[in-house]
Length: 387
Image (cartoon, rainbow, N blue to C red):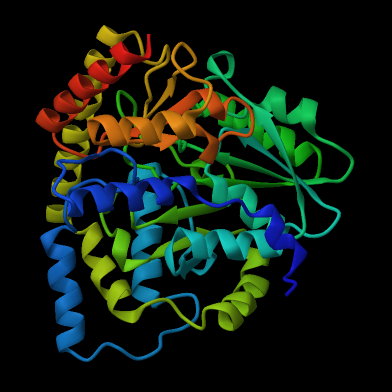
């Protein structure tokens, strides 16, 4: 049997194998500490759950417009206005089934056979996989401490080719948690515009920031495409709801795509998401952001003691990207052995990085401080046996 050859360019998500192994160990009675999946232990805020239940009670289960209910598009527009001083018309916002739905629309519109897309390495793997499915070639640019683990304007300029059509950023990023400063983001928009290309920015961890105010490219340019989600900051992972901001002239073809690919986003989820922007809900989300900051700092202190803390602490998201080269050059084996020996589940760097992933791992600080401290203790025992 033969399949579409483009599927050969889509690698498996190795963390899912680790998650399956971790769940098996739990079923066998082991106390597993989960630091592998990008999903905090917070439940969906009560106001959002209540709004979703009310939508079901009221029978709001029929199809909506392909781009989402007008009230939600207006609420998202208001969020950009109130939090980022950005003028984003509701008509430029397309509500989608998760951020993945937004990324699918953007990739199908902006990339195709013969096109090249430049993005950072490491990066969330689906970003490059979606571009590959569109038939484009991805130029993954290795980044590190010297570039703040971000794709800078200088790097984009030096890797832009005649057939490059798109530059993609993620800020805050997965897996490193690093943020592109405003001045650099402004420079990026100028570099891409000067070359007649498109800019796509993954902002799904926007709002989960430490030591700096959240930033959106929408406050800099109305030409950028922006992927965002209700999953991370708003705590609605299983509701599968995201959105895409697009320039005005791109809305019509994107709407046609959405009509054919999705038909419409989940109706109950959309009505639930309206409550996410209410003041009482935003207070809950801010308290959770502060708790994540406490967890980040606790984990950094523990890893500093082990000599594993990153030189540049993350300014956003809920991940740490660790160099384990002193102990291993096989991050997949390292993670599997750590799970088997100490019941700590983390993610191999090969999921995210084409270069250097074999000696990096990602840790998600998505559990309580006592559990994080316990995980560090178990990691210390494991590392002692590696010497």
